[in-house]
Amino acid sequence: MNSEHLPWHRIANYLLGGLFCFTIGYWVKNNLLIFNDKLIILQQQSSHLLIPLPIWCVNVVAGVLLLYALLLILPNFTVLQQRRFQSAVFCILLFICVLPLHKHLNTARFNDVRRLSDAYSLIIYSVGIALCFRGLFGRYPTFIHIIGSRIFLWIRNIPSYPFIIGVVAGAVLICSIISWHIFDGVPGTFDGCLYMFQARLFANGMLSAEIPPEPQFFGNALVILSDKWYTQFPPGYPAILAVGVLLRISWLVNPILGALTIAGIYLIANELYGNNTAKLSALLACASGFFLFMSSEFMAHTSTLLFITTAFLSFVWMVKKKRPLLSAMICGTALGIAILCRPYTTAWFCVYLGIAAIVMRKQLSIRHILIGAVPLIATGLAFLAYNAATTGHPLLFGYIALHGKEHLPGFHQDPWIEQPHTIVQGVKYLLGNLNGLNYYLFEWPVPSIFFIVLYLAFEKKETWDWMLVGWLSSLFIGQVFYFFNEFVFGPRFVYETLPAVILLTSKGITTSTQLLVDRLKTPSYTHARSIICFILTGLFLFAVLFNIPATAKSYQGKYYGEDITIHKYLNKNNVEQALVFVKGERTYRVHYPFNAPFAEPHIYAKDRKNENRKLAEKFPNYRYFIADEKDIVEVTIDEL
Image (cartoon, rainbow, N blue to C red; front, side, top):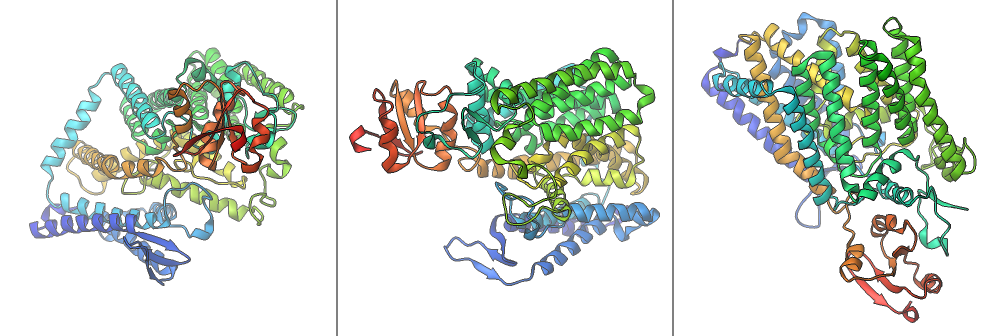
């Protein structure tokens, strides 16, 4: 970079400029909205200041800022000009992944706590990082080398077993704290509440419950109330969650599953790239806000991710001839359980793994593959048996029984909105999920997948690298065919790509280190590694101190988390049997799981006002309440 010749006043200007960009980015993140192609500045008063600036003008400014950030890091593009094809790939990927997408792309319909203006704040933050980078390395950064090298050596010198045990235990602790203090130890998402309902049925030895009296009081968009009472979901994750219900630690199930996934990521990285990359990958997973929040709630993605990761690890062992027979059995079993948790996602992963097996057929034994298929087929048959016991037909899944065949993946009329789902819309969803990873994955002030873009553009890929790219691509492509897209703690429909994303990020960090040595004329590889370590530490500190707490606050008490105040009140006051008519959709949702098993000891029903007496008459020995999250009033049957 030849940056040692920069005078001190220019270095100071770069650093001040970086701090100024951080201030502007923070202001944009918290005070700027975009609505109907207009910029809206939020004010403390009720009125807002509208700026009728076309959205394309804002995107042009954002593009110029991004180009300026690149020029700061790579002056005059002298480095990029050495390899023009790689430079073109890098720039295209970076612009696709960073430039904000227009709201009409409809990339996430519900629950996205981010705003379009966050994309602009991310770019402004990136400029600030680039300015600080240029300033800090204006002269040889001795203190940065000392700090970075000490952090690296400290991590490297930790023995492997204490390291991974510490990281896994830390992940369980962090996720448990989030689960208990942010989500109150109960499911708050729409899906999570119904998973818990089904899990409580399983824990009581039932696949489904009998239809309750007056079923209109117990309706739910994801619940089947026909001749039986059960949810639309596959049985895998509720069965796992049922273990937590029986042990009375249901809020610990996903934190434990998430922590075990980190161990799986560590083992995969250790097999493919060595111990240093394995440690880095485990730390990246443990520091991912997307990963931590998802592992703290009651969504099935966490269990699916664990078993998909286990299947891939077992596949690696099969290829490397490490107890191939046992590895094949583990791989098939893990894939089977994953199918029982999330069939559509796992089906795409199975297709990818099948293609990988064909590519690596010389390293694999047909006998081992057939043996591994046995548990996979067995779990598939168990799934069909569950369908027969619930929906009445082995091939009729709960989701289709409830919603109909028009809800199957494919390019057809979208059953949720009045427009067809086309391949163009599917690609928009793909880009939206890719962009979502930028915001939610690490919560950095720069795009989270920047290092992946760097790696894909500049590093020579080997077979296992392409395997990770295939893992990532298969699940993204699978979502192109699905008409529904939703953000829950991030782009949840591509959550199962996280191990591949994290491993590719680790490889990208190694690539950036080598780029500093080869093309920016850093004194040595050791110094370059210290610089990258220092930068990563700064990115994570920014995320931990600013972005992740803000995201956690946005989750608390909103769509995702809701205190079960009614249930706590009944237990605190030793109410033995209660029939509670619940006001408010969210409050009703979080109390719904307590209806399994039904009427033991309490019943939570929708408040249907004048109809409430009809249900109350079915339970004459119960006490009656009308309640929401704030007020709980006991009434007599005559007052209903």
